[in-house]
Length: 102
Image (tube, rainbow, N blue to C red; front, top):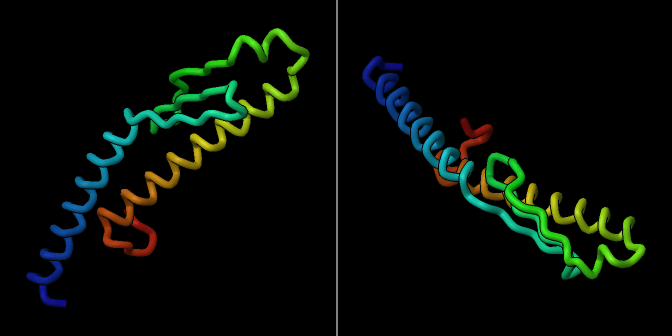
Protein backbone atom coordinates (compact mmCIF):
# COMPACT_ATOMS: atom_id res chain seq x y z
CA UNK A 1 0.00 0.00 0.00
CA UNK A 2 1.49 3.37 -0.96
CA UNK A 3 2.61 5.46 1.99
CA UNK A 4 0.36 8.40 1.08
CA UNK A 5 -2.73 6.16 1.16
CA UNK A 6 -1.64 4.64 4.46
CA UNK A 7 -1.19 8.13 5.97
CA UNK A 8 -4.65 9.09 4.74
CA UNK A 9 -6.18 6.00 6.34
CA UNK A 10 -4.38 6.70 9.61
CA UNK A 11 -5.61 10.30 9.58
CA UNK A 12 -9.18 9.12 9.00
CA UNK A 13 -8.91 6.60 11.83
CA UNK A 14 -7.57 9.25 14.20
CA UNK A 15 -10.39 11.60 13.23
CA UNK A 16 -12.97 8.87 13.92
CA UNK A 17 -11.35 8.15 17.29
CA UNK A 18 -11.55 11.85 18.25
CA UNK A 19 -15.19 12.03 17.15
CA UNK A 20 -16.03 8.88 19.06
CA UNK A 21 -14.32 10.19 22.20
CA UNK A 22 -16.25 13.46 22.00
CA UNK A 23 -19.58 11.72 21.44
CA UNK A 24 -18.95 9.28 24.31
CA UNK A 25 -18.10 12.19 26.63
CA UNK A 26 -21.40 13.81 25.66
CA UNK A 27 -23.21 10.53 26.25
CA UNK A 28 -21.66 10.21 29.72
CA UNK A 29 -23.57 13.28 30.96
CA UNK A 30 -26.83 12.52 29.14
CA UNK A 31 -29.70 11.34 31.36
CA UNK A 32 -31.62 8.13 30.67
CA UNK A 33 -34.92 7.54 32.46
CA UNK A 34 -37.23 4.58 32.91
CA UNK A 35 -40.50 4.35 34.81
CA UNK A 36 -42.10 1.04 35.76
CA UNK A 37 -45.52 0.28 37.14
CA UNK A 38 -46.29 3.97 37.40
CA UNK A 39 -44.60 4.02 40.76
CA UNK A 40 -40.88 3.53 40.29
CA UNK A 41 -38.61 5.86 38.33
CA UNK A 42 -34.88 5.44 37.78
CA UNK A 43 -32.56 7.97 36.13
CA UNK A 44 -28.98 7.15 35.12
CA UNK A 45 -26.27 9.12 33.35
CA UNK A 46 -24.79 7.61 30.21
CA UNK A 47 -21.72 6.64 32.23
CA UNK A 48 -24.13 4.38 34.17
CA UNK A 49 -24.00 6.38 37.40
CA UNK A 50 -27.31 6.68 39.25
CA UNK A 51 -28.86 10.16 39.24
CA UNK A 52 -32.22 9.49 40.84
CA UNK A 53 -34.48 6.80 42.21
CA UNK A 54 -38.08 7.79 42.90
CA UNK A 55 -40.59 5.44 44.53
CA UNK A 56 -44.22 6.48 44.85
CA UNK A 57 -45.12 6.70 48.55
CA UNK A 58 -48.24 4.58 47.99
CA UNK A 59 -46.02 1.63 47.13
CA UNK A 60 -44.10 2.02 50.37
CA UNK A 61 -47.24 2.04 52.51
CA UNK A 62 -48.29 -1.41 51.36
CA UNK A 63 -46.65 -4.79 51.67
CA UNK A 64 -45.10 -4.48 48.21
CA UNK A 65 -41.41 -5.10 48.83
CA UNK A 66 -40.98 -7.75 46.11
CA UNK A 67 -43.01 -5.79 43.56
CA UNK A 68 -40.98 -2.61 44.18
CA UNK A 69 -37.72 -4.55 43.91
CA UNK A 70 -38.87 -6.07 40.61
CA UNK A 71 -39.88 -2.65 39.24
CA UNK A 72 -36.49 -1.23 40.25
CA UNK A 73 -34.65 -4.03 38.48
CA UNK A 74 -36.77 -3.58 35.36
CA UNK A 75 -36.27 0.19 35.38
CA UNK A 76 -32.49 -0.11 35.83
CA UNK A 77 -32.27 -2.69 33.05
CA UNK A 78 -34.31 -0.47 30.72
CA UNK A 79 -32.01 2.50 31.38
CA UNK A 80 -28.95 0.34 30.76
CA UNK A 81 -30.46 -0.90 27.49
CA UNK A 82 -31.13 2.70 26.40
CA UNK A 83 -27.51 3.58 27.13
CA UNK A 84 -26.28 0.56 25.16
CA UNK A 85 -28.47 1.54 22.20
CA UNK A 86 -27.14 5.12 22.34
CA UNK A 87 -23.55 3.80 22.36
CA UNK A 88 -24.25 1.57 19.37
CA UNK A 89 -25.84 4.48 17.50
CA UNK A 90 -22.77 6.64 18.17
CA UNK A 91 -20.45 3.87 16.96
CA UNK A 92 -22.39 3.48 13.72
CA UNK A 93 -22.60 7.25 13.26
CA UNK A 94 -18.87 7.78 13.72
CA UNK A 95 -17.48 4.67 12.02
CA UNK A 96 -20.09 4.29 9.31
CA UNK A 97 -20.86 0.84 10.61
CA UNK A 98 -17.36 -0.60 10.39
CA UNK A 99 -17.28 -3.93 12.21
CA UNK A 100 -15.76 -3.66 15.67
CA UNK A 101 -15.97 0.13 15.77
CA UNK A 102 -13.16 1.83 17.67
